[in-house]
Length: 426
Ligand code: PMP
Image (cartoon, rainbow, N blue to C red; front, side, top):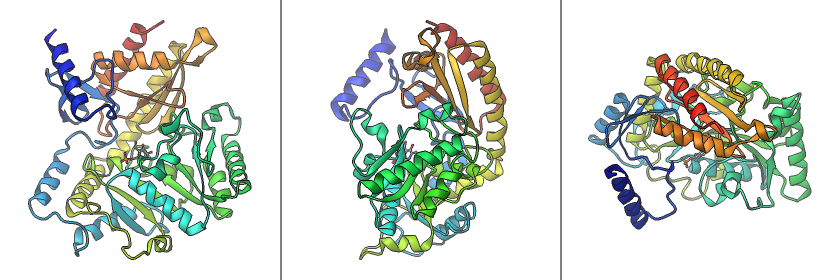
């Protein structure tokens, strides 16, 4: 029909212009034109509940951010090599949410850049090259960061200086914390034996692309203590869990009672305005004392600072962390109830509004079911709900709505999800 023809024409145009590196979601790609709070609207006016996009974390097109950016854009926007008070105020306020030892903030534009700098700091500080990461992690797109992002080379082999932790085996462990520490110890020894040494353990503290591993809270602690005792740095990638998503605090690592050496952040930091940051101890940053220091043309611009400040204001004023806890607990309870009634739902995990749900095939001994996951993602889209997958085998559904989601919207998701479980039943 007409709508299909229009979508087809847009897909062709896209291939002819931006080319094939730019992947699209869904069997029938979605053409959206507007966003508001937890909703996205397509070109036909149909609305979709967005439980996928974690960048507009305080809600799509939040008027406070829109206004702050527009006003600053019309007043002054320039790189940060001039004095400007906004950046100090923002840095002070953000650093106040972190452990005291993390006393400096560097601002850039993407999560990849912040992780790229974290690797430089860890290697410069320790004089070692090896990095430990989890098996389906994604940390960004620069050449150095791609090496520590196994999800970017699923079929290939990791570089010699990268050690990979098999975190998908964690749910089978009686004592996850002891097991994780043992895996890290083994990794350090492997890297030492290969002559690289271990510069850092780099993990996303909610293990998003690995399939979301949140519990038991504190499971990272023994591993991080062991690593730090051996002089390695702990880099907490907060690009996904940061800015209140996990509910109890601003940062995912705090659930684990650990103090990172470096914290990297991005995505929700500007609610869609491209900005990212890295927090570290002052002496670590001395590693970058080259002639140019560190220059990032757009990082920490007055407009970025305005966007970031508005985001912090809204998290406080709308009490979004408390809402993330409240709605997250509700989601989890209801999803566990669904798990009890559908044998293909094999696990529900998460913290705050960052939840993962595993799908398996009961007729194949409960094997992970990536096909079913894809079918559900596409069926939910037809049903007005946007969701995505994660995990080593692609069989985890990721539930990450804006932090302002309300009970009625959670219920709508749960209702549609159950419907789609029936529609896609094998
Ligand atoms: N770290 C994590 C955990 C991420 O999920 C991502 C992006 N998906 C990045 C880093 C990279 O961020 P960016 O795309 O802004 O470079």
